[in-house]
Image (cartoon, rainbow, N blue to C red; front, side, top):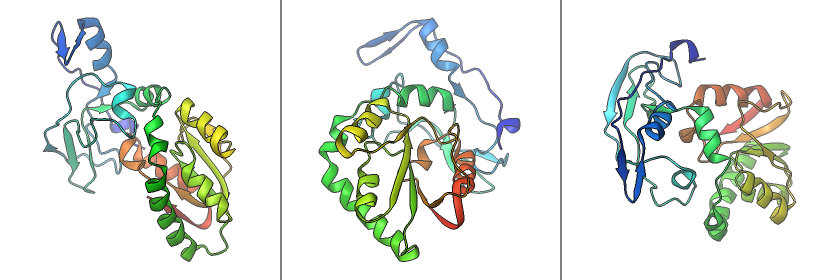
Length: 231
């Protein structure tokens, strides 16, 4: 893990900040500050050769609207660092896993399903490639399942679908639209059967978690022997 090599530093804040039409008090900014961590070790390999990579383009206070899939801030980033050992690029300072989960749990994104046709085309391509490797199919677990579009396609093609998603709204939508029982929560904290799944999919997920090592380790534990992780 990376916890022992990870240290928190305080990020100086002014008395007040104006972002767009929002004005934040010093107390609100301090609360925001404490939700971010300056990493001194790579979250993927725990290497300590950390270098600045690119200055961030995102400014303002992070809310659930800024992290939904169809947000208007898409493509903007925080300050990025790169690991000299493995090449992993990551946000630094980095929002804590707990903070991100608290935001994702409140995300509502109706526009996501409005783009279902295009998303289905992409997911179908992924499933077809996966089925060349696992023609007998089996149990498939989707991490960050959103409203269940991939899982619904997988079920129609003969897979046994399961998944997890932090957004309460998305979990309800998956149940209402597709009859899917997606777990509400996060992969790292979920109690899941070990050695159960033929495939674990992480589509548009691994680059959004501050705990990539832990996520891949958990995926490995729930995959059956010779199972496949899709990133």
